[in-house]
Length: 134
Picture: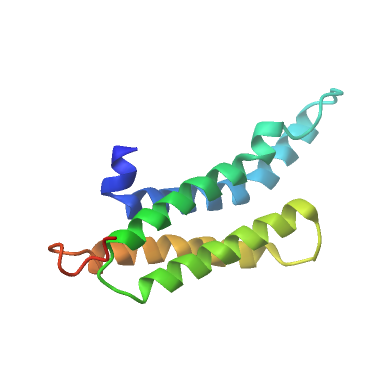
């Protein structure tokens, strides 16, 4: 938790990139699983289906802490709007409401990681005067 408070952008970028790896790897893992076994077990483990929620949870707190110390006021709406879009896309995928191309989720997750890295590199406060502490 201390790392999340000190370097939330690093945690957020890592969570976004792991989310992308998870999304890209899933079809290949289950394709390999179905072609290699004929067992009667469910094809998708529950923990694998729900790992998206873990990524959303981690990225929520990373964005919350990153927006507390950013020196760029424009980063707040960019980070939160990207997280909101990612949340809506994942919820849509889980509920199956609309048919949205998977590439949209990849683009949003990548842009969230890029925003975290940009915020880490260019938008950190040098002192308490520029930060948005409560």
